[in-house]
Image 1 (cartoon, rainbow, N blue to C red):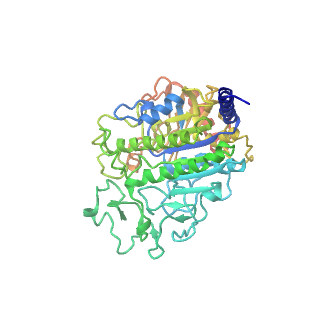
Image 2: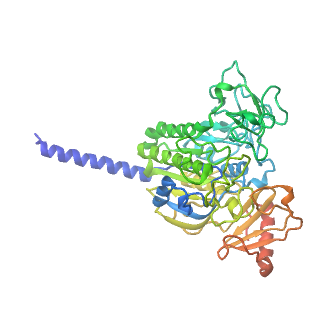
Image 3: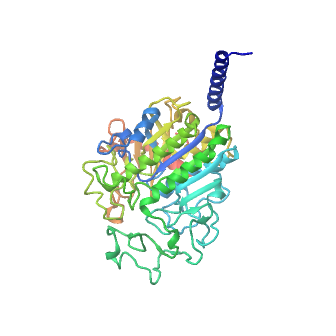
Length: 516
């Protein structure tokens, strides 16, 4: 016979053994991977990167517990090209079709092409994408009323819940896997670009129906009192409510985490690619965030983004996945204030500086266009701190493959390099160089130097139009250590640096593996 005290001691020891076993298993299992990609969040938009006019408590907590990178880049200063490069491991400038797409564009990434998702899936991961897509769906004649293929499933995602393009583009509906969500067959959807649909009100002809007026473009089909880009008819029961967009996609992401929790704890890892819509236009945060920051609707939408991040962190913690999940939070391109609507964003900034100390914005070849907030959190592996390593999202494919123990085919991710030691904070050595991209322009970052070739090009202002493209712009060279705001062009002082960087950039145009 065993007395009660001895029994309790044995039980406690057994419980401790189980907990210790769980911890060991968590540290030896391949980690779950969650990438949160914000939309138009700039380098200076959040607390970890110096914002003081609004509070981002969840991002602050993430940064305090994780690794904050100061020299991390998306691959392009606009949305679609960055998303293309992130998934394929190929710089978007190599694909002329990888430009900002209309809402009815066909699938940009060819079915069967190797992507981050397909490489991880082939190595045993369950994969999902939730939120903004903007990489095209279907073929040239997509039918929004039937099965929509090709889509994420054809490039490696087991599950998808999507905003097909952007909030300011039709169709204004969600898709789940390969169908529109909540569609009434008796009210079919019609979507087209270029020609108005007879009988459907537009912003340009019906300004009295709008919540606010467009500042440029964005004056076509009206949905929820907001005129969009593109034309749409029907699908009334399937149309999203802008104020509920963040709640909807975040709930789908956290539901996915909770569904995967039991199998993930037993060693079946997952990859979740969660694309928020904040702070992209139209900025219509939920009423619980409106007016809460003191620096306008754009800051309110940033606060909503911070809430989305917090919900993901909470779900991981609830499912006991926090210790064995690599969580990366970054953005698709730099900030823009007026991007098509008179929403008061400029007037109400109250001193907030979305780009921080960097020059430029979304659409710009200067640093604010592509240098991103970039936080990495993995308590079981990554020590808290700050890293100056040179990083880029185009390396996710090779880096995550290494983390998963996978060997991608030779043709996969032509520009993607394995930066796992730097990502985990085990090395301060990141890339030797990377290419920055904005429209027709590319630039080279190498060490402390930033080189922009001579182009007939925009000057990096808030807008990008031909009137602002000075002819015969000289080459530019910046010492980012001494001049992070790119105020002094030192190309004339360092002709040898200009010559060598120009030669390398030219070589990189055609050869992804070019070296200095």
